[in-house]
Length: 289
Length: 286
Image 1 (cartoon, each protein chain N blue to C red):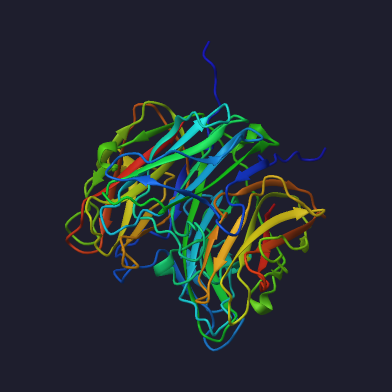
Image 2 (cartoon, one colour; image 1 turned 90 degrees about the vertical axis):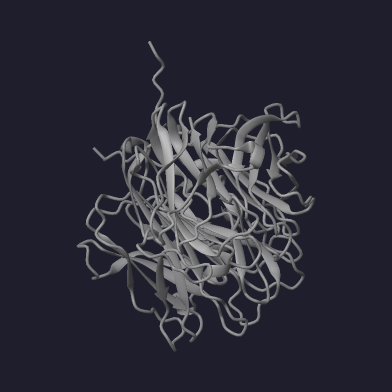
């Protein structure tokens, strides 16, 4: 008798917004859907755009890679993106995932689309997925969003996904997250409350953004997620670095953070900075339930 | 009776070399002229079993042919007596950030749901095609995750099979876009699985040349000259900042069920009519 080994979830469906009939021929190009903030108004959503139209199958994993237009060192380059849904497949949008932090990533065509999010979330067949964005400056800012929706798992019992996402710590009026005072010179600062879960999370993502100042110091920042002033096991380490051009690299957002966080958990963050006089970066938690 | 809802795998262990602000990842040396450089320790003596490995490479973008291969090494005893673990990850033309330390920035990323025993150390060795020695040019970020609370909800393999590798040239299998702009070229064999894969990674190395044409390219993987269901479109954009740099979008870990004996293929399309020959590889987890 042979040993029966369990297999993987094995998705058989994937749709993305990367494949296009005509590739962008400009230097570097962009991948995915372009979405822009309101022109002339800070912290105001721009026009919603469609990223995926009328999914052919149920989706159980949504992945995003995002880069924003070239930052300027005289503006607040904070920026948020909402993922929208119309279950009827049109453009009557309602919220699906709120306030993803995406600012300070630099010109998406030059430094890539380094902001990554992985949401194991169920989206019904027939739904369309949209995007809208707001920025901390009156200068209209755009983002390139590459999106993939995976579904039809061969072994659905081996794939957990939620049905909604709770955003903690967002300050949409400033297009940023909860400010955290970092420790200086590579020391960690104090644990700071980001928010309290109202649902039991099975997966989680951290969104983080450089300080929402118009003149950014060159510095690196490292984030930890925790509760009860202890790092949450299995959450890894997240890092961003920025310079006076306000371009930030990000590392650590590479896979879904599978977790089991009870409703009512006070989730915290702490940050260390590489410089002696750091500015305050911000972050949000996105809990899938 | 309440409805019993299954929970997520809930990984409760993580280890990373992304620890400090000064030099955030591990500096490594890629060997030149298609010879491996020195082995470097990335993670020492894991405290727990790991079930997911994420690795990102950068610093392979000199002004010459930058096709590159990276090996992930293991010493189960926690030392530096290295054995091969994951072979020949293509990672050429990946830029290191200049912001500070060894930032991997828009580097080349792979994700492997793979079991690594507690106590093992993980190492790196790599090679580049170009002849220039670059002793401080490479950087590797690595993270591992493990200790699932619900292991029955999480699949991982124990090995990785690399397909399409031409180690003597630090390349993968050559894939050429159509000479007609925005038109996919022919499906090209990458290799045939000899195991049943539960997960798959795709890697694009770069052009088989010392210079990179400015171009955006889309890639697909398939078999029987048909795109495989459940796989995304992959995008590469080359020479975007002037010095042999390529960025990659859409290179997700793919959860698959690919039988042993499957002849896997890739194809690509590009802007312009003078498409270069490129090279790519596949990595099956079993």
